[in-house]
Length: 158
Image 1 (cartoon, rainbow, N blue to C red):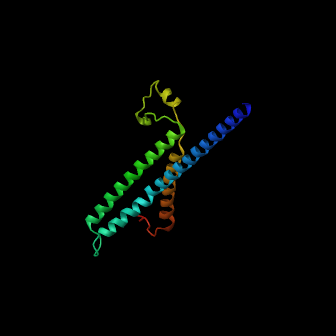
Image 2: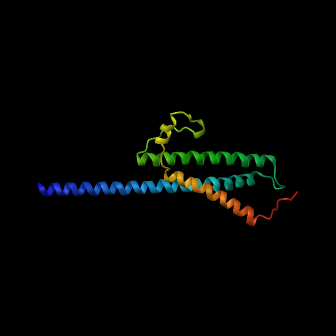
Image 3: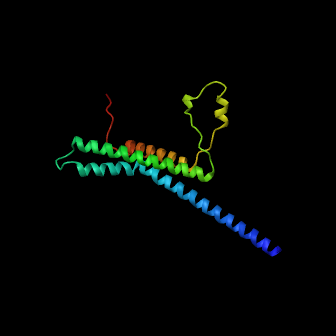
């Protein structure tokens, strides 16, 4: 009976370890999905919108309808990607066991004693949120590098 108890405990430990590996794999996959979605908000959505607009535009050049199609496709694609990114982040938080709390923007918070309550409830950023922030910073840096180093447009001096 003692041998059975040891085998049972060892099997239980292996099962727990397998669940831990599976959980880590799901966390990595969710973070990777968040990275793909965040990067596509800045790259894939505009490229798709421009492609769709080019298919609608007449051969003679640009038209107002093509521009409106580009804007509509861009808005819809970015909204869909942002919605998906929010759901990936929610799944990531659920897998970590984090509760979704009501968020109050800092400028809407009271400046009285309740302020301590918000300071105590500060939470860490998730990997998905960090990836989204990094993609925004990378997009802004890429724009600045392009504008200041590679764009052949000079600001007029007066």
